[in-house]
Every structure is written in structure tokens, then in C-alpha cells.
Image (cartoon, rainbow, N blue to C red; front, side, top):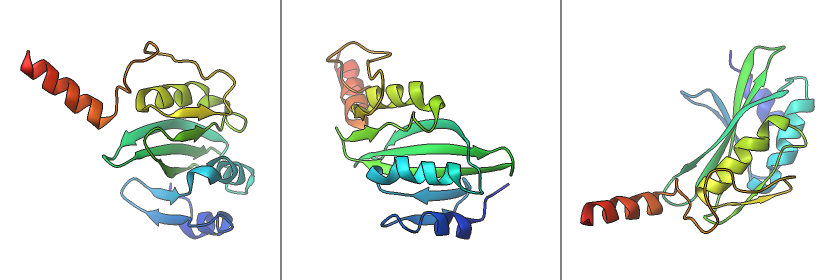
Length: 151
């Protein structure tokens, strides 16, 4: 089921520039990167009861990195997506204090998109060696394809 988008917007209204819309994905709230930990905490503590972070993922839009937090309310049988955008080489603020399930996806996302992970208890690399280019950035993927083609 979809949460009430008006209620979500009301809960997050004290954050600057919040946008809430219903898309084919479901209800999506867009918040500033600096507000993500507080916004997720607000949603968790509210009567909407978004107590589970199902997943966290990133996508390179070609201009910046978009981070999506997939939240779930078991008591209401609802799902919500919270999105934010970070510049290349930006800082991803950890939400592990509110959602322990963020511990590994945050590390993976930060590493694969070349982001700095702030406030995480163990921000070490998981998949690549130090100095390796961020594997999921479009610029790196295109350069790698060109190198393979030129061989």
C-alpha cells in the first residue's frame, strides 16, 4: 500500500525544500542530503511507523549521485522512498544510528560511487582496493569500455 503523501509532506515540512510526489515507484520524498538522517528519524518516530530500512542504493544521473532509501512500515503495510542527491565526491551521512540495516549498503554505495562516508563506525572499503576508481560512476564505466574497445 502507499502511504498518504500529504501526511508524509506534513511530517517533513520543517525541512527546507522537501518535495513529496506519487510516482510509478510509489510515494517519493526528496530531501536535502544534510537533512536525511533527521528526516528518516522523523519518519521512523512518527505514527507512520517507518521502522525498517529495506535498502539503500545509489545511481549516477550523469550530473550527480542520487541516493534512494527504501523504508517499510510493517504495522501499516506501506513503503516509502526517500531520495537525495549528492555531488560527485560528496559526503554520504550515515543513518546507521537509526537503521542498523544501513551499515553495509552505506559502505558499498559510498565505495562504488566515490563518496565519503561520514558518521559510520567502520567506513572501510568492502569490494575494491584503495585507489581504484569508483566502479559505478558513468564516467569510469565509459572510460573502461573505451579502453577495452581500443585493445
